[in-house]
Length: 205
Image 1 (spheres, one colour):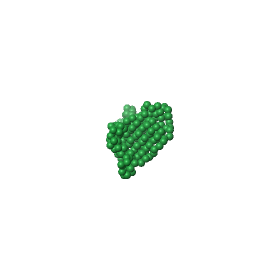
Image 2: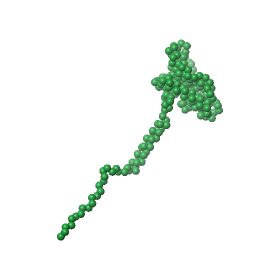
Image 3: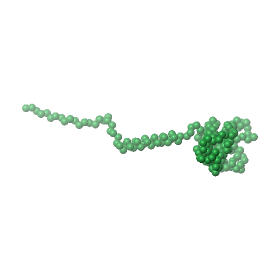
């Protein structure tokens, strides 16, 4: 009499511990949104990055055609010269100084909103304050006015069809030779007619 041995049923397949569980759809969407957000942030930072060809600067104050600009104390003369040359380039290529954070200096002039302007560059922000700039403009305090001019690190002037740029202070007769060594004229004289529409508008040239 033969004995029937019970046959063992095949064992149920066990999960492979090395096999990764597919990501849930919600998790995939969340990760996609996260990476997209990082991409947008990085892209925005890249597109809005500061212009590395000129030093960082801020407009401390503006009084009609006069503009006081502040740059960091560590800014070198070559960097200030690069900033002045940028103002000169803007003046020659349409005078759209709005892109340089400067409000229109001659807003009611039919020939253009930036017919005349003078930009004073300082490394000490106190000289760029509105009250100081106004006193300089009115000339009510001669000692302060001379201090203002001696504290300059750079200067750019546009007067209709004339331009001027300089490094260092505006000198006075009593100033020493040592102070004069810091002053240097970059350019001064007539400028060519601006290319393109003046200040980005349709004003006649």
